[in-house]
Image 1 (tube, rainbow, N blue to C red):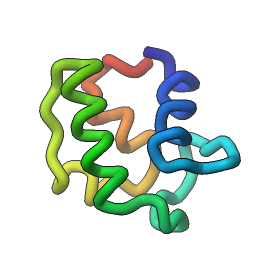
Image 2: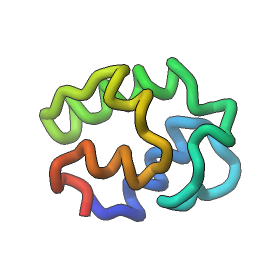
Image 3: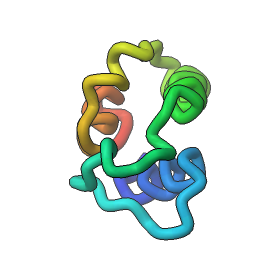
Image 4: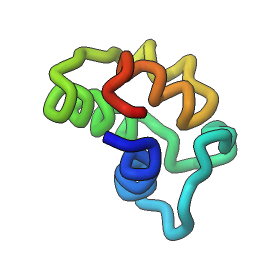
Length: 75
């Protein structure tokens, strides 16, 4: 999956009207919440066969941090 494709997915997961940049501060979005975490955990499992945790996502500050959790599946 490309970085752009992931950013589009993240925009949909967070139900944002505007595109999100890979260096955006996730803490600036009230949509960056436990529901988004649960959907991302499922997304990683389904699309990459990878298990990530709530704690993994809680330390992410930018979409780029989330991409790094993919261990190369997002490039």
